[in-house]
Amino acid sequence: MRVLIADDQELMRVGFRMILEAQPDITVVADVADGRAAVEAARRLRPDVCLLDIRMPGLDGLQVTRLLAGPDVTDPIAVVVITMFDDDEYVDVALQSGASGFLLKDCGPALLVEAVRAAVRGDVLVAPQVTVRLLRSFRHRPQIRATAPVEALTDRENDVVRAVARGLTNQEIADQLFVAVSTVKTHLAAAQAKLGVRNRVEVASWAWRAGLVDA
Image: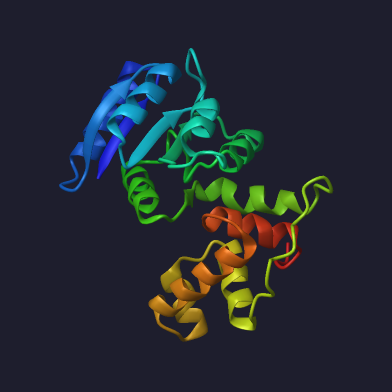
């Protein structure tokens, strides 16, 4: 797995590099100090994942996320946003801009590595302390409504969508529904296609906005 790091603090870049390169399956291909350099390096090197700070000179991490992973990007690159600030607005904008993960800088090495691996798999990892709080807020925002799926979800797809919205992993969903993990993945992929969304966070936000999950 090839990772690009963008953070305006050199100590943070060095620390992230040390944590990630201690893993036998992760290589840091570049680390840069500002947003414009992050966009240029990402487009040139095509890493598997970009690890972006929010507050950077030039372009901030949210702008970079939109340019690399946004809905209008033809060939998006997975992005994990990492910041010191536990701000729901940052989380919301990052995920709406296409981020595959959102972490706080005090998350610890294990969660940082898992977020990178999740992004490569096409999954999403959000700091546990903000996940449910963020998703619950969607049901109180009348201006953000859940669009109807292009085709009705089956009962089992609804079960999987609700479980994803509660933050369960594929293995936990499989255990709860007494099915194989591969079956969960099949139902989740079908639900994503019907909802027109790209990842687990978008599935979860749709479920909360649609009122499918109890607060």
